[in-house]
Image (tube, rainbow, N blue to C red; front, top):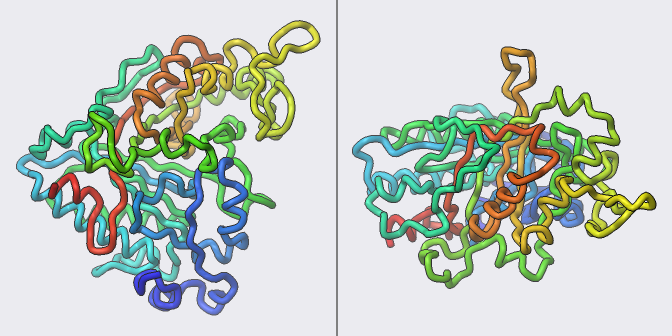
Length: 416
């Protein structure tokens, strides 16, 4: 542990929890997505809410945090476009500033000229993740470094996309288990932009707060369904291959993406008024799982493998032909899979009184053309859940590997 990550130093500087600081020692989290990593999270995350602030996720490392880190209670997603005249050198300076500030914040340290928004709070599992959009490369004079996997996503029949809330040159994902800590990071990074970039769009999300349940559990989305049960698991033999670009990238994957991943970001509004009018039985058939415990309708518990061939006594499939879990299953998509790390959102109410709420869908994979795209194409052809969803924004970002102390994220691209 470096001096910057020494709990005794940052607890003192941020006056973390006052005399209650002794109730929970600082923890280092290196887990995965909700549900898939519940057992690991139970061992490594402090359970009492009074200790939530003491948990730190290291910024430096082979891979960026915020990919296999358990999803936090609060998130901000923000995309920027390079300002006119901003070049590769200006972008490098910005990523250097951003990385420095992110390292300080994730260690629980206040950067210079701090606003005091999160004064007295610890890092609260704060993570900051940076990515590059397709349009960045041409503007920065790096067209020869554009990954083939960053090709534009195809059009889907269910899309009703708002171009102003889609795509972007640069992307930041911020997650934390305290709302003020998350906003503090957003504000600190925004203040570092200078004249290099301009805001394109920003979205806010949330999940269940750690400690709200009697044990670590898969989180629920706004439809009340457990979301993340069938995620790829680190113990899977092919987990690394599916989620991360290998250390020696194949043709079409530039060297600077080694150890990185690709993030598909979709703002998906849920038609909750229509969904809530369905009976419980009908909701479960649409999904293919029980609402109470997430168990597949083919039997078992939440983690029991889905049996797509199971037939009920009446001769009907236990999991219907257009049920969401059937259509999205790797077995239905030639093994295609992705690590889903979503957040819910609620942006008030629409003119008709319906909630403007749903899912900030974030999916991680080594190649979106082999992960997200084939699955979404299958869903687009016939998924019972689709009529209760509206895809309103979409983006794809190349997220490079992490950085070592003294380096910054994206350095291999911007200085290579």
